[in-house]
Length: 259
Image 1 (cartoon, rainbow, N blue to C red):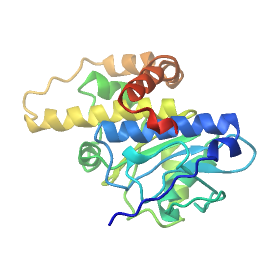
Image 2 (cartoon, rainbow, N blue to C red; image 1 turned 90 degrees about the vertical axis):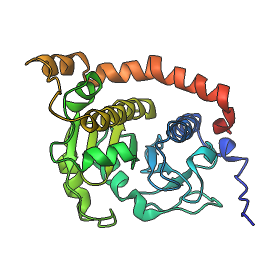
Image 3 (cartoon, helix red, strand yellow; image 1 turned 90 degrees about the horizontal axis):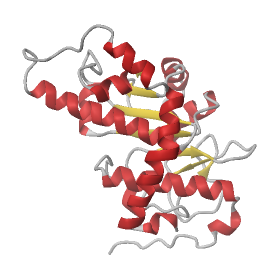
Image 4 (cartoon, helix red, strand yellow; image 1 turned 180 degrees about the horizontal axis):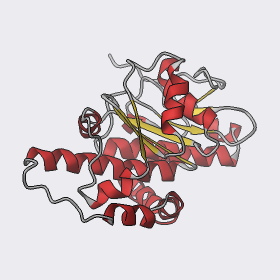
């Protein structure tokens, strides 16, 4: 018989308005990842920094499907991945290794999203990485870093190398592993992930048709698109346009993520 866990109903009254807003956005991101088919059972994580002087973060309960996650069920943890607020849910400290490294190293990395989609993994296994053969790829490519695979991310020593490889970029292809994006807000990180995942999906379809007939964009076009899609502009688009629309979409489907 399935175990039914009761989500605390008083979480909203115990946190600040700013934290509740981040909880709502992160819960929405989990629901959207499930909606787009990017989830991997209960595995992988999306995390967000809790506003305030403490180094606290929000992450998914390890035993919930992404489609079940709500603002109240998100677990508040410290830099080691341990809960700092009472919760009936399990956590996975090892799963926070990648996230903690980036959160702590980048002041602008308030949100970190990490996925294991088939298309993202496929491109992560390609030696050439992301190719600039579609508009979506060109939007994402100039802001993508790469990190070589070192095994399942439980080694704390890997954090320094991961941060160094990410540098000032806002997206990363973890070779032979998956994709990752960061943002000052959940909205920013989600839109970046959307473009990165769509670019990976298109590349898999494109290469399945054969390389001999690929049309390479004219010289200079890739650089032009990079200038047209600078991180600041993409963040504005996500916060003012795309994210509000995505929240309305979720509200039409199931507003339960706000609970």
